[in-house]
Length: 310
Length: 157
Image 1 (tube, rainbow over the protein chains, first blue to last red):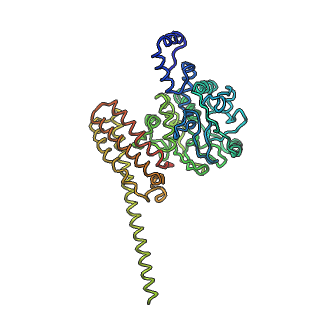
Image 2 (cartoon, each protein chain N blue to C red):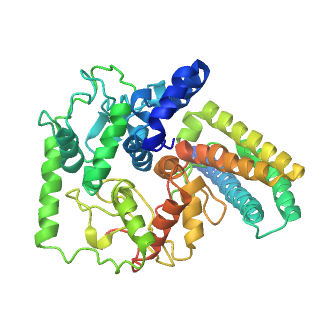
Image 3 (tube, rainbow over the protein chains, first blue to last red):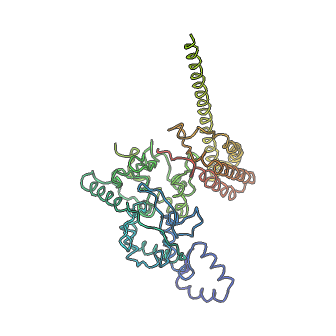
């Protein structure tokens, strides 16, 4: 939903008041995107809704299998540290994130630490969300604040292994920073589309979460960015999405990559399954320009051979 | 003599059993080959229809692809006999065990794919590009993709 310009808003409001039918229609439309009428006209909410779709917040934080309300959590997800149940991120004050300040939200998104000091496992991809700009995080919060609050107690209890997972990843990051080779060398950005694609792919899109191999310590191997993974260390297999002609997407055109992000179809007429099918439910909600921007960015870096360092 | 008869009979049973298993496995391997070829044909058909949508091919070729797709998709349930999954054929089959442990769901999804393929074929016959594009997207996502998501293991590369 595109917000009305601020100058027209009050005039539109008065018209809406005069027409209960139009108001009912607008209410239905807003309900369809899960926003409350009070905030849905806010441009920040509209921008936040787009970012939420790009990141797929609703995919993990909705128990769709059991008919759960959007963003109300409850989806059970298998991780290498056992099954976690996603928390409620609707603005319900008691069981959601309604009581969070913007500072609380930013800390959770950037550092994976809740207001009560709870540490989140990296199944919540905060290392990627940490790259979202301040204004994008504020927009995202504005959107989540606009979602209908749902009371759903008993979710999101931190796993007792969360701290172990965090400690392991921290050791991995420290090791990579001090002893491993230089991190991924990205080519100088060629144009605005590549930059935009880099931003989306590395923040909300969290492509590297699956497509960049991890070390045993659970840290992304930055020197192997997007090279794919045989799942040696975390069991998560993912293909090479660097422009390697043999094992990657070197033979794919930018249009073909954008097309996959739109409908899941590959150049050979196959349609992706597994986790990527879920990601396509995010990327299909992006604009054509943003899908092409991600494609342009993926085509930009030098090719890498498939998988973990051998 | 009595002992050797017993051994001969036992050996015959073992050999016959081995042959039976071998033949069954050869049958499964042949079915798997057919399945892979059928899936590739479907991919080719979808590529042909996409080419029309992208203005790279004419409607007649897309219609031919649509007609073929319907016949290929209808074969799916018969191409998944037990014993042809990734457990039995690692590196060749990517069919998860869920196909057989959740057979009814798999059959329902195969029927959905069949219905979507028929709808796409009907749209192609109608010749309206917007309808064809919509039916193509529906087939890809809710026909092919919705089955691959729960039932097909990712290929690592």
